[in-house]
Image (tube, rainbow, N blue to C red; front, side, top):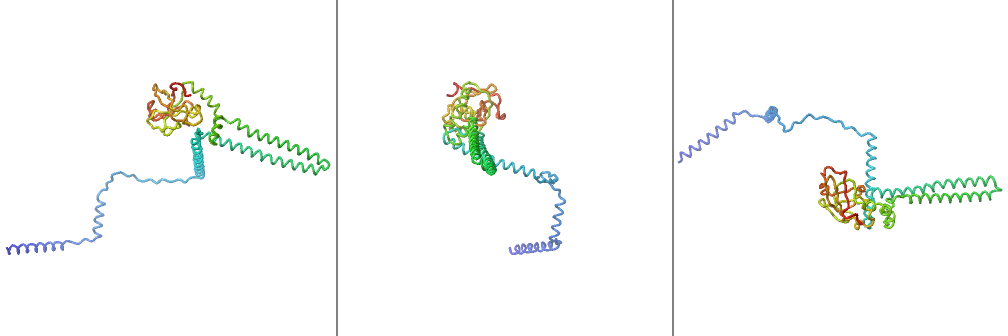
Length: 329
């Protein structure tokens, strides 16, 4: 047993000695040499890319000219003005809806505002033009008074009477000019002004002529127009609908012809319509009011529109429809 242990110990010692001698016999390699060898191996190995990248091309960025900068500034100003006007119109429309009135369209609201501002501008211009005329008359009176002292009393009285008559004529002309735009304004502008000021009686009077003529057209029974679709929600009738509901929005002019009071109580709300296009007919119910539609146009939900034609068409010409059971009353 002792001999075996001695033999194993001698074998291990001999192996370690041989390994040490062999390692000492190998030449040493510096760090720089190892780096150079690694670099040479990388260059010798072909590079592989998953995507072939072409040579990059330099593109010159042109600076904007003065005209382009001015156009961009004008476009930004127009965009800011439009958003400001749109926000003001939305506030006026929400105020009209809160009072139970039919809100004015964007064009009606701003046409009413522009007509009011133009009338005020005309009045101010008349006043400004009358002021120089009065100054000239006063100067003439002073000149006549200095040139003819004997007849100063008669001339001053005649000039005063002439100036008073001129002033009366100017006042009458100003009153006529201010009353003429009010009389010649269209019913739509009157309704827009009434909706903006919250006057329900003025809106009813201004739309009396348009509603009577429109109602006579509504009872004819058949309409021709275009078909579009939109994303429904809370409509003018006060109902909340989804894309899958068979409801429709009729034009604002046709909707208002049945009444300009509270839109939730409009007789057209809930009335059924039979719409036909390309040999296909569907039945829908009125639930909303379309601002951008013409007299005979209909604005469907996506489900209703797809029942008539493919939604990729977007707008259908040649739509015909009629009231079921007669026009609303």
